[in-house]
Image 1 (cartoon, rainbow, N blue to C red):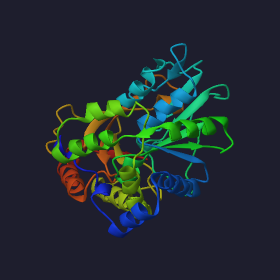
Image 2 (cartoon, helix red, strand yellow):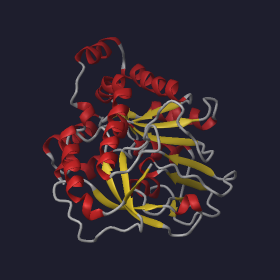
Image 3 (cartoon, rainbow, N blue to C red):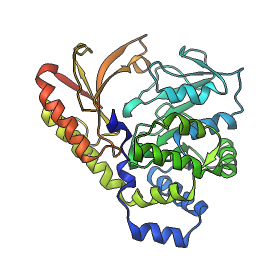
Amino acid sequence: MKYWSQWPSGTTKYNKHTIVRHLLRSQNSSRVNEIENHFKQLTGHPVLLFSSARNALYSLAEALELNRKNEIYIPPYSALCLYECFGRSLNISTHFLNQEIVLINHKWGTIQKSICDLVNQFVIEDSCDAYLTPGSDLFPNGGQVQLVSLPKILGTISGGLLLFKSQDDALYVKLRDIQKSQKPSSRLILKKWVYYKSKMRFQDDWEQLEFKRKGINWLESLLILNVLPDYAKNLRTVDERLEAISKLVGVRLNHPSYSGPVAILKTENGKFDENLQFSESIIRKYHLDLSFTNGEKKQYSEVLIFPIHLGISDSVFAINLKWLEKEAKKLGALQLIN
Protein backbone atom coordinates (compact mmCIF):
# COMPACT_ATOMS: atom_id res chain seq x y z
CA MET A 1 0.00 0.00 0.00
CA LYS A 2 1.16 3.54 -0.71
CA TYR A 3 1.03 4.58 2.92
CA TRP A 4 3.91 2.27 3.84
CA SER A 5 6.22 4.26 1.58
CA GLN A 6 5.53 7.69 3.07
CA TRP A 7 8.51 9.75 4.24
CA PRO A 8 8.88 9.06 7.99
CA SER A 9 7.49 11.88 10.11
CA GLY A 10 10.70 12.44 12.04
CA THR A 11 12.58 13.64 8.96
CA THR A 12 10.02 16.17 7.76
CA LYS A 13 10.12 18.36 10.89
CA TYR A 14 13.33 20.29 10.67
CA ASN A 15 14.77 22.32 13.52
CA LYS A 16 17.08 24.57 11.52
CA HIS A 17 18.90 25.84 14.59
CA THR A 18 19.69 22.30 15.76
CA ILE A 19 20.87 21.13 12.34
CA VAL A 20 23.06 24.19 11.65
CA ARG A 21 24.57 24.08 15.15
CA HIS A 22 25.57 20.43 14.84
CA LEU A 23 26.73 20.81 11.25
CA LEU A 24 29.07 23.70 12.07
CA ARG A 25 30.29 22.65 15.50
CA SER A 26 30.75 18.92 15.34
CA GLN A 27 32.09 16.13 13.16
CA ASN A 28 30.07 13.04 12.30
CA SER A 29 31.93 10.89 14.83
CA SER A 30 31.12 13.28 17.69
CA ARG A 31 27.47 13.36 16.63
CA VAL A 32 27.37 9.56 16.76
CA ASN A 33 28.86 9.73 20.26
CA GLU A 34 26.21 12.26 21.31
CA ILE A 35 23.40 9.98 20.14
CA GLU A 36 24.94 7.01 21.93
CA ASN A 37 25.38 9.02 25.14
CA HIS A 38 21.75 10.15 25.03
CA PHE A 39 20.49 6.58 25.11
CA LYS A 40 23.19 5.51 27.55
CA GLN A 41 21.91 8.10 30.03
CA LEU A 42 18.31 7.08 29.34
CA THR A 43 18.88 3.34 29.88
CA GLY A 44 21.98 3.20 32.08
CA HIS A 45 23.65 0.81 29.59
CA PRO A 46 26.46 1.24 27.03
CA VAL A 47 25.13 1.78 23.50
CA LEU A 48 26.56 1.46 19.99
CA LEU A 49 24.87 3.17 17.03
CA PHE A 50 24.79 1.50 13.61
CA SER A 51 23.22 2.63 10.34
CA SER A 52 20.31 0.25 10.89
CA ALA A 53 19.20 -2.64 13.10
CA ARG A 54 19.98 -4.98 10.20
CA ASN A 55 23.51 -3.65 9.99
CA ALA A 56 23.87 -4.01 13.76
CA LEU A 57 22.90 -7.70 13.63
CA TYR A 58 25.16 -8.37 10.67
CA SER A 59 28.03 -6.69 12.53
CA LEU A 60 27.22 -8.77 15.62
CA ALA A 61 27.48 -11.98 13.59
CA GLU A 62 30.86 -10.77 12.30
CA ALA A 63 32.09 -9.97 15.81
CA LEU A 64 31.05 -13.41 17.07
CA GLU A 65 32.86 -14.96 14.08
CA LEU A 66 29.82 -17.05 13.19
CA ASN A 67 29.87 -19.38 10.22
CA ARG A 68 28.01 -22.37 8.76
CA LYS A 69 29.07 -24.53 11.69
CA ASN A 70 26.83 -22.44 13.94
CA GLU A 71 23.05 -22.41 14.35
CA ILE A 72 20.79 -19.71 15.70
CA TYR A 73 17.24 -20.07 16.98
CA ILE A 74 14.82 -17.54 15.48
CA PRO A 75 11.13 -17.78 16.52
CA PRO A 76 8.54 -18.67 13.86
CA TYR A 77 6.68 -15.77 12.22
CA SER A 78 9.66 -13.47 12.71
CA ALA A 79 10.44 -10.66 10.27
CA LEU A 80 12.18 -11.63 7.04
CA CYS A 81 15.12 -9.32 7.80
CA LEU A 82 16.18 -11.60 10.69
CA TYR A 83 16.53 -14.57 8.36
CA GLU A 84 18.40 -12.38 5.86
CA CYS A 85 20.79 -11.05 8.51
CA PHE A 86 21.87 -14.39 9.91
CA GLY A 87 21.24 -16.56 6.87
CA ARG A 88 24.26 -14.98 5.22
CA SER A 89 26.59 -16.27 7.91
CA LEU A 90 25.14 -19.28 9.71
CA ASN A 91 22.26 -21.74 9.81
CA ILE A 92 18.76 -20.84 10.98
CA SER A 93 16.67 -23.08 13.23
CA THR A 94 13.16 -22.78 14.69
CA HIS A 95 13.90 -25.51 17.25
CA PHE A 96 14.60 -23.77 20.53
CA LEU A 97 16.24 -26.49 22.61
CA ASN A 98 20.01 -27.01 22.59
CA GLN A 99 20.82 -24.00 20.38
CA GLU A 100 24.06 -22.19 21.19
CA ILE A 101 22.65 -18.85 19.99
CA VAL A 102 19.09 -17.77 20.78
CA LEU A 103 17.32 -14.72 19.39
CA ILE A 104 14.30 -13.74 21.48
CA ASN A 105 11.96 -11.59 19.46
CA HIS A 106 10.00 -9.14 21.61
CA LYS A 107 7.68 -8.67 18.66
CA TRP A 108 5.76 -5.40 18.45
CA GLY A 109 6.86 -4.48 21.97
CA THR A 110 5.53 -7.62 23.67
CA ILE A 111 8.00 -8.82 26.30
CA GLN A 112 8.78 -12.51 25.85
CA LYS A 113 10.33 -14.33 28.82
CA SER A 114 11.74 -17.82 28.51
CA ILE A 115 10.75 -20.51 30.98
CA CYS A 116 13.98 -22.34 30.13
CA ASP A 117 17.47 -21.93 31.53
CA LEU A 118 19.51 -19.80 29.11
CA VAL A 119 22.77 -19.73 31.08
CA ASN A 120 24.74 -21.62 28.43
CA GLN A 121 23.37 -19.78 25.39
CA PHE A 122 24.33 -16.50 23.79
CA VAL A 123 21.05 -14.57 23.92
CA ILE A 124 20.09 -11.69 21.63
CA GLU A 125 17.13 -9.68 22.90
CA ASP A 126 15.49 -8.31 19.74
CA SER A 127 13.49 -5.26 20.84
CA CYS A 128 13.46 -3.53 17.45
CA ASP A 129 9.79 -2.75 17.93
CA ALA A 130 10.07 -1.26 21.43
CA TYR A 131 10.56 2.20 22.89
CA LEU A 132 13.25 2.89 25.44
CA THR A 133 11.89 4.61 28.53
CA PRO A 134 13.44 5.29 31.94
CA GLY A 135 13.12 2.10 33.93
CA SER A 136 12.53 -0.08 30.85
CA ASP A 137 12.65 -3.82 31.47
CA LEU A 138 15.92 -4.39 29.60
CA PHE A 139 17.53 -7.81 29.12
CA PRO A 140 14.45 -9.65 30.52
CA ASN A 141 16.05 -13.00 29.62
CA GLY A 142 19.55 -12.11 30.76
CA GLY A 143 20.68 -11.56 27.16
CA GLN A 144 24.16 -10.37 26.25
CA VAL A 145 22.88 -7.67 23.85
CA GLN A 146 19.60 -5.90 23.16
CA LEU A 147 18.57 -4.40 19.81
CA VAL A 148 16.42 -1.31 19.14
CA SER A 149 15.39 0.38 15.86
CA LEU A 150 15.43 4.20 15.76
CA PRO A 151 12.97 4.60 12.84
CA LYS A 152 10.31 3.03 15.05
CA ILE A 153 10.85 5.38 17.99
CA LEU A 154 12.06 8.57 16.29
CA GLY A 155 10.45 8.43 12.85
CA THR A 156 13.89 8.61 11.18
CA ILE A 157 15.06 6.61 8.17
CA SER A 158 18.23 5.28 9.79
CA GLY A 159 19.74 4.03 13.02
CA GLY A 160 19.94 0.83 15.01
CA LEU A 161 21.12 0.56 18.62
CA LEU A 162 22.92 -2.32 20.32
CA LEU A 163 22.77 -2.17 24.12
CA PHE A 164 25.26 -3.95 26.36
CA LYS A 165 25.41 -4.69 30.07
CA SER A 166 28.94 -3.38 30.52
CA GLN A 167 31.37 -1.16 28.62
CA ASP A 168 34.13 -3.55 29.71
CA ASP A 169 32.46 -6.37 27.80
CA ALA A 170 34.95 -7.80 25.27
CA LEU A 171 32.14 -8.02 22.71
CA TYR A 172 31.37 -4.32 23.16
CA VAL A 173 35.02 -3.45 22.53
CA LYS A 174 35.17 -5.65 19.42
CA LEU A 175 31.93 -4.24 18.00
CA ARG A 176 33.12 -0.71 18.69
CA ASP A 177 36.16 -1.42 16.50
CA ILE A 178 33.93 -2.86 13.75
CA GLN A 179 31.64 0.15 13.97
CA LYS A 180 34.53 2.60 13.62
CA SER A 181 35.86 0.72 10.60
CA GLN A 182 32.56 0.98 8.72
CA LYS A 183 32.60 3.62 6.00
CA PRO A 184 29.46 5.78 5.66
CA SER A 185 27.47 5.36 2.47
CA SER A 186 25.89 8.34 0.72
CA ARG A 187 24.56 5.91 -1.87
CA LEU A 188 22.56 4.10 0.81
CA ILE A 189 20.74 7.17 2.12
CA LEU A 190 20.16 8.40 -1.45
CA LYS A 191 18.36 5.18 -2.30
CA LYS A 192 16.27 5.50 0.86
CA TRP A 193 15.44 9.09 -0.06
CA VAL A 194 14.31 8.11 -3.57
CA TYR A 195 12.31 5.19 -2.16
CA TYR A 196 10.33 7.32 0.29
CA LYS A 197 9.95 10.48 -1.78
CA SER A 198 9.00 8.99 -5.14
CA LYS A 199 7.34 5.77 -3.94
CA MET A 200 9.69 3.88 -6.31
CA ARG A 201 10.45 0.37 -5.12
CA PHE A 202 14.17 0.51 -4.40
CA GLN A 203 13.68 -1.02 -0.96
CA ASP A 204 15.18 -4.41 -1.77
CA ASP A 205 18.21 -2.70 -3.29
CA TRP A 206 19.04 -0.48 -0.32
CA GLU A 207 18.33 -3.25 2.15
CA GLN A 208 21.07 -5.26 0.47
CA LEU A 209 23.49 -2.36 0.99
CA GLU A 210 22.85 -2.40 4.73
CA PHE A 211 24.59 -5.76 5.03
CA LYS A 212 27.83 -4.46 3.52
CA ARG A 213 29.27 -2.79 6.62
CA LYS A 214 28.07 0.70 5.78
CA GLY A 215 28.45 3.17 8.61
CA ILE A 216 26.08 5.98 9.48
CA ASN A 217 26.85 9.15 7.51
CA TRP A 218 26.79 12.86 8.37
CA LEU A 219 23.26 13.48 7.10
CA GLU A 220 21.80 10.51 8.96
CA SER A 221 23.39 11.58 12.25
CA LEU A 222 22.07 15.12 11.74
CA LEU A 223 18.54 13.88 11.09
CA ILE A 224 18.62 11.75 14.25
CA LEU A 225 19.89 14.64 16.39
CA ASN A 226 17.24 16.87 14.83
CA VAL A 227 14.41 14.84 16.38
CA LEU A 228 16.14 13.54 19.50
CA PRO A 229 14.92 16.47 21.67
CA ASP A 230 11.33 15.46 20.79
CA TYR A 231 11.75 11.90 22.07
CA ALA A 232 9.63 12.41 25.19
CA LYS A 233 6.97 14.16 23.10
CA ASN A 234 6.96 11.22 20.69
CA LEU A 235 6.27 8.84 23.57
CA ARG A 236 3.29 10.97 24.60
CA THR A 237 1.98 10.90 21.02
CA VAL A 238 2.16 7.09 20.98
CA ASP A 239 0.28 6.90 24.30
CA GLU A 240 -2.38 9.33 23.03
CA ARG A 241 -2.90 7.25 19.88
CA LEU A 242 -3.21 4.09 21.93
CA GLU A 243 -5.73 5.82 24.21
CA ALA A 244 -7.82 6.79 21.16
CA ILE A 245 -7.91 3.18 19.99
CA SER A 246 -8.78 1.83 23.42
CA LYS A 247 -11.72 4.23 23.77
CA LEU A 248 -13.01 3.29 20.33
CA VAL A 249 -13.05 -0.46 20.95
CA GLY A 250 -14.04 -0.16 24.61
CA VAL A 251 -10.89 -1.73 26.03
CA ARG A 252 -9.61 -0.36 29.32
CA LEU A 253 -5.87 0.19 29.51
CA ASN A 254 -4.17 -1.54 32.43
CA HIS A 255 -0.69 -0.16 31.82
CA PRO A 256 0.51 3.44 32.25
CA SER A 257 2.77 3.58 29.21
CA TYR A 258 2.88 1.53 26.04
CA SER A 259 6.20 0.05 24.93
CA GLY A 260 5.64 -0.83 21.28
CA PRO A 261 5.05 0.87 17.91
CA VAL A 262 1.68 -0.78 17.30
CA ALA A 263 -1.55 -1.55 19.09
CA ILE A 264 -2.13 -5.30 19.01
CA LEU A 265 -5.79 -6.35 18.92
CA LYS A 266 -7.11 -9.91 19.14
CA THR A 267 -10.43 -11.68 19.61
CA GLU A 268 -11.23 -14.18 22.33
CA ASN A 269 -10.81 -17.15 19.98
CA GLY A 270 -7.74 -15.69 18.27
CA LYS A 271 -9.32 -15.57 14.80
CA PHE A 272 -10.76 -12.91 12.51
CA ASP A 273 -13.20 -13.07 9.63
CA GLU A 274 -11.36 -14.19 6.49
CA ASN A 275 -13.39 -11.71 4.43
CA LEU A 276 -12.34 -8.71 6.50
CA GLN A 277 -11.66 -5.79 4.13
CA PHE A 278 -8.98 -3.24 4.95
CA SER A 279 -9.52 -0.80 2.05
CA GLU A 280 -7.13 2.21 2.44
CA SER A 281 -6.11 1.51 6.02
CA ILE A 282 -2.70 0.05 6.81
CA ILE A 283 -4.05 -2.12 9.60
CA ARG A 284 -3.10 -5.68 8.80
CA LYS A 285 -3.75 -9.19 10.07
CA TYR A 286 -0.72 -11.13 11.27
CA HIS A 287 0.18 -14.07 13.49
CA LEU A 288 1.66 -13.49 16.94
CA ASP A 289 3.73 -16.34 18.35
CA LEU A 290 2.73 -16.99 21.98
CA SER A 291 4.70 -20.23 22.27
CA PHE A 292 7.96 -18.87 23.64
CA THR A 293 6.73 -17.42 26.91
CA ASN A 294 4.29 -20.13 27.97
CA GLY A 295 6.36 -23.07 26.75
CA GLU A 296 3.57 -24.59 24.65
CA LYS A 297 4.28 -25.64 21.10
CA LYS A 298 2.78 -23.83 18.12
CA GLN A 299 0.49 -21.53 20.03
CA TYR A 300 -0.21 -18.68 17.64
CA SER A 301 -2.95 -16.11 17.52
CA GLU A 302 -4.28 -13.99 14.68
CA VAL A 303 -3.95 -10.34 15.61
CA LEU A 304 -4.69 -6.98 14.04
CA ILE A 305 -1.67 -4.69 13.92
CA PHE A 306 -2.57 -1.02 14.22
CA PRO A 307 0.52 1.20 13.69
CA ILE A 308 0.86 4.05 16.19
CA HIS A 309 4.60 4.77 15.87
CA LEU A 310 6.09 8.02 14.61
CA GLY A 311 6.69 6.64 11.14
CA ILE A 312 2.92 7.07 10.72
CA SER A 313 1.66 10.61 10.14
CA ASP A 314 -1.39 12.02 11.90
CA SER A 315 -3.41 11.92 8.67
CA VAL A 316 -2.67 8.23 8.07
CA PHE A 317 -3.45 7.43 11.71
CA ALA A 318 -6.81 9.17 11.28
CA ILE A 319 -7.58 6.98 8.25
CA ASN A 320 -6.81 3.86 10.29
CA LEU A 321 -8.96 5.05 13.19
CA LYS A 322 -11.87 5.74 10.85
CA TRP A 323 -11.58 2.20 9.45
CA LEU A 324 -11.57 0.70 12.95
CA GLU A 325 -14.63 2.76 13.92
CA LYS A 326 -16.44 1.44 10.86
CA GLU A 327 -15.45 -2.20 11.39
CA ALA A 328 -15.47 -2.38 15.22
CA LYS A 329 -18.97 -3.85 15.48
CA LYS A 330 -18.12 -6.62 13.02
CA LEU A 331 -14.98 -7.59 14.94
CA GLY A 332 -16.77 -8.41 18.17
CA ALA A 333 -15.11 -8.22 21.59
CA LEU A 334 -11.48 -7.25 21.25
CA GLN A 335 -8.54 -7.64 23.59
CA LEU A 336 -5.56 -5.33 23.67
CA ILE A 337 -2.18 -7.04 24.03
CA ASN A 338 0.53 -4.86 25.54
